[in-house]
Length: 186
Image: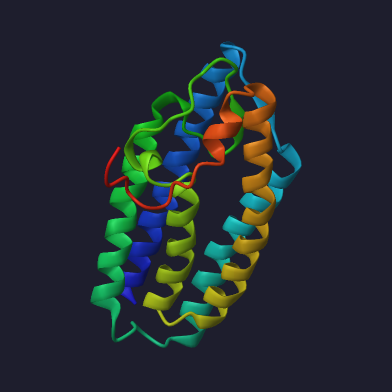
């Protein structure tokens, strides 16, 4: 239970730190003329993520099932996801945000993980929403939030791509490229 509490505190600290960075980036980008899209769905998304932490905490504390027998493998997966998260944030730099904020005239990022996949951060979050509850045998939390995340992403990803096209019509062809596997040759 001690490991879970330390892990949980780390997650909360990490998410709050990311929200502060996102707010700082939002201010900077809006000063440069950036536009925000999808304000309404953002409240549902942040609400879902907040409820995830509450549900995870409640299920782990109430069920007291302990750690999954595969916890070392799952924790390794979590650490790899965190390294990928840092890669995403550093690749986007001042453009990284939890909101859909687009700066007209800015080039679409195609470096780092964006060279291989269009929305790596959403893949990372999806993996976390599966790995973290599974690591602590919080199966109900894992199932409910995997479904809720899929619903949110089915709204958010098309909204984000439409917003990018609306701001810069040169982006459209780039968004339709199949970027899921590394480029093996030119």
